[in-house]
Image (cartoon, one colour):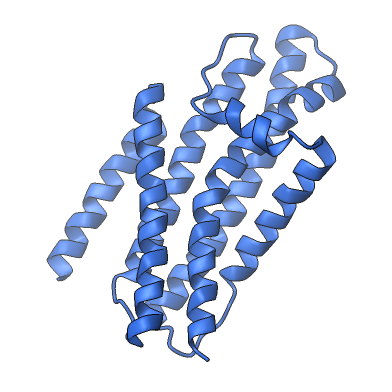
Amino acid sequence: MKGKINFLTISLVVVLAMILFIPLPILVFKILYFFDFLLAISIFVMTVITVIRKKTVKFIPYFLLYFSIFTLALNINSARNILIFAKGKIGEFPVIPKVIGELFSFGFVKGMILFVATVLLTFFSFCIRNKIYSENMKASLKFCRGTLIAHILLYIAITLTACFIAHVSNGTAFFESFQLYLPYSTAQTFLFLIPLTVCGVGIVFLKWGER
């Protein structure tokens, strides 16, 4: 069992290194994002099995750990597209334009409220305590909270950096750049919050099943 876990860990490190440092083509990004979403659904299914059988699935903490790192690596890789766009070049956004349309279709303020509500609900779902949690599970949830905070910090950093680059490269006013790039960075972060939220729902389901 430990040999399999070590193999998965080494494989994950190699994949993450490739994701972090190699620009991904659109098709590859979509495949990896689809895989990321499948991981989130797998974790949710495991929580359902745990509640139904009243027996903890031992792999949940490891899946949570691998999933949260993988999601953050994908977010970091896709962030370069916004910076390329800020330089005045044509950046490629794999699925972000569609997310922008859905997120802000009923107004920018309402879209931002939905975004903030999703962040808070996901964060607090990872803060839920359960008496059936093992030490590994508690550590994995703590790590998930940390990666969620990293997503938000990346969101702020990318937005401000894009504004600065646009100001230096194109002479665009900072506030004007902020209005332009905030929807893109918000949509990008929201894109990676969706799988995290799916996992969060599973954690809430675990707490509900404790009763």
